[in-house]
Image 1 (cartoon, rainbow, N blue to C red):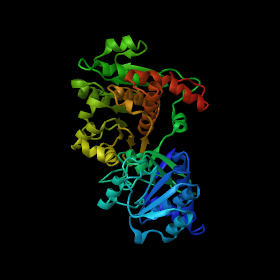
Image 2: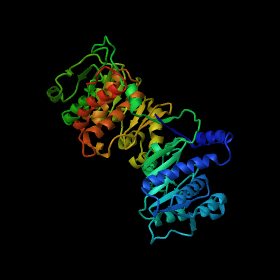
Image 3: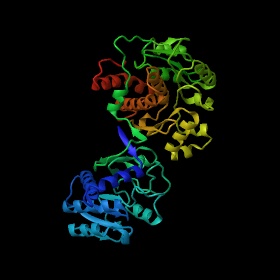
Length: 469
């Protein structure tokens, strides 16, 4: 599991470690890790050109000492000091001794092979100052490697509030930071590489499941299981206006993770034709999925589901009828536009402060909130958040959310709590899209069809003997 820590947590851990190490050890570890990633991206050292953008903080020092390593390997290293009077004099001297040089401005006529962004440290707030933004713009389309985080992003919130660096890659030290996982800041980070510098860190409130975590959380039937003990998921989705949404939601639920699927909605004939194993009609369930393509029937469907006093997954049209806490364990699955309507905001406000508003909604509705996006956030009322970073951009396609809602409902019915169900479900959803699309376009039915094989693979990797699907 990847854990993202706050600036305060990282700094406290650094102070504790620095008290036990010779002075400068941490910076040398960080600089060496940074230099080797830059070399990896360059592909070769001799004849390559690197431009260091050096600010006044530790990230500037990391960039300069990384430049020392690069220069010793034959890279032509230039450093532009944005605050010359505050740059680390020892690091500047070391760079010059190694063959690097300090330059007064960006030479637009000589494009560097890589730009190393060491302008702001993790304690920076707000966007880049005008002069720093102009320097970044002058670098044109040269590839950028950011030190720790791209300069100008908000490290602890994942927000972006002004001009900032857009990196192709980011090298971070000791721990991931919130900005590496939460959009929109994460989008500016590019590929993120973690360099272990020996920090002892506390538990983090923002995490990202990895494959082994998902495999460990997948529900497994006991040796004496039967379909009812494995969980029955009920689906109240689809309508005469949107029958396909009901079919797709059932497809997401019918992956074999729960023992049975029960359907009530306006697409019964289509569901029977596509999924003959599904039971159409009233009956007992362990969880309900409501709202996908529900249209005008969504409010009534939500009220009927809540009367059963079992956990619910509420999606799409059902979200319009959520006015407060539902009184049962709940997973709400909005995209940014739907969450904006729930909170009385503009969509752009939610998109620029995704982590903040996911947490706010979870607290307001006393429910787990799954905010769908490039990096999906799953937030609890207590403020804990998991981020799903798998899945191609092709997953932004009609019907994929219906599949996700059904999948999450099956996980709740099989025994996972809404937080685990949302985070495992969104990870499976993204990984299935990767598998189905093989790097290209994918449709919602493709994603649903890929889920059983994905689950079988994960259960095999984790040593489980039971099959999924």
